Amino acid sequence: MFHIVGCNHGIQVGTGGFAALDGVAANEQREHFRAMLSSICAQSGIDSVFEEDGGPEETAGQQLAGQLAIPWSDVNTSNDDKQEMGIPQNYVEGDYPAEMKNKWNRQREVFMGSKIKAQRGNVKTSLVICGFDHLDALADLLGQDGTPVHRYDYRNLPWYQDGIFT
Image (cartoon, rainbow, N blue to C red):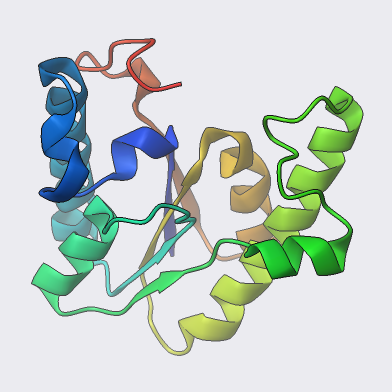
């Protein structure tokens, strides 16, 4: 089974590091996010974590995997991967048509899904953390073989405040 959590990437930052320099509202959101991930792991018997990570700091998912002594893997596309796929490194913020950005997102999701399936091995219940733009398409890809997929979108939870992370 896959438990896939969509997120704004700013919320992924773990405790310590530069997060301490952010405002109270940002760190409160991160605390709720970490608690949500911890709850998913405890209730579902998560035995591996896969994450679209692109930041310089440890993520909450990475820290949680370390605490639980389970494997964690970054499944993000590197700049070299994007170059091989013909995707501009700055495509998300760049001035490209929405159709192209969507096409490149789908390419990256296929890449991430393949990486997850290749690295998953014999584990039974995995947590996948990715950006909201990838949540549905990646969940669909991971469930194509009949593997159950549970999706989480914290934007509908009471603790979520829009606009803190964009």
